[in-house]
Amino acid sequence: MEIFVRHATLRLPSVVVAVSIKTFSALLIAAWVIQAACLADTNIPENLADLEKIQQYFEDRFPDVPKHEFANGVYALDSVARDNWEALEEFPPYEIYIDSGETLWNQHQKQYLECFPDGPGIKHRYPRWDEQLGTVITLAYAINLCREKHNLATYDYMGETLNSLIAYMAYLSRDKIINITVPNKQALGAYLDGKRFYFSRRGQLNFACYHCHFENAGKRLRTETLGPALGQTTGWPTYRNKWGYLGPLHKRYIGCNQQVRAAPFAPQSEEYRNLEYFHTHMNNGLPINGPSVRR
Amino acid sequence: MCVIFRIFVIFFIYIFLSISHIFASDWQTAIAETEALITQTKTAGGLWRDTEKLLAQAKEFQSNGNQQEAYTFLHKAKQQAELAHQQATKQLDNLLIPYYLKH
Image (cartoon, rainbow over all chains, first blue to last red; front, side, top):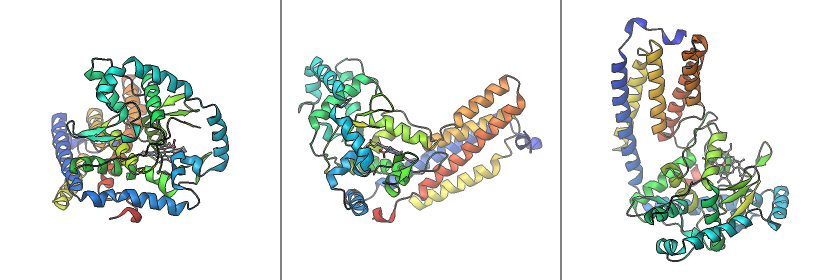
């Protein structure tokens, strides 16, 4: 109790506190925006060289792992876990979701084809920068935008229905090569935002994604081997035994934030969409292999 | 331009932190201060998982008349908010980009 009563004589009315806090916050936010603009004001090709550097880093770290194997996440590194996983893949628990996803697609095929004229097998093109909306569009987000446009109820991002539909689309995109582009400076701003997310320390444990999935990839954390950052986005949606259902990438983001005791963001929030943009761009050249199954 | 604005940010944080303790004179202002810090940390994207829960617990103890526990929890929440805010602002200048990704 002591700590709050040290300066009782200098007590200020709470109005003053509120006003000064508001001014301070406004200044801080302004500085943040300008800071983001500063970062975005850089050379595009130079920044996108991250892609080769990241892939090179993991190829040097794990010279015995062929590049396409990184799409299998931690199972590219941990042979015991891999045995287990290969057994699961014989009767994959995600199969029923692909079937119901197909039914869902067919149900509104006409509307979906208007939004996605190349058909359902387009997972490898997402996330992408949308010029008109000025934001990063993930496949989940694009589906809900499409449904909104056609006066259909939007889906819950964490729910089984949307993820079944995406499982079907991912399945038809299998082996298609990821090719994410960053077309302009605004898009680069979003990319750099996602990059900043990946390398920022957060939570009470003070970890960045980078600590676990770059520096400590291949090492063990309690009972789990840490997977490499490279290839982390190729296999979604994922049936996790721990979840007992098929969930989206952003559910994993939430979990990985919470385990370092950081407050998570909402699924499909701008933060996570930008993160997915950076996170997927580094996988350019790898094939889509979703849906997948994980421990 | 970036450098000037960074200096500005640091300057305002310094001013804010150096005068902020004079506000903390009673329950209401301590709550207001913690909430403001939480808001700022949220804006910076660096809030911790349990801070808002601790604050909610503090308020609950207060409304149940348990002053001592209320202040203990408020203190924890405030401390977390301060550390999280420090952590978040530090990321602006000390981002951990490894040498092999530097341009």
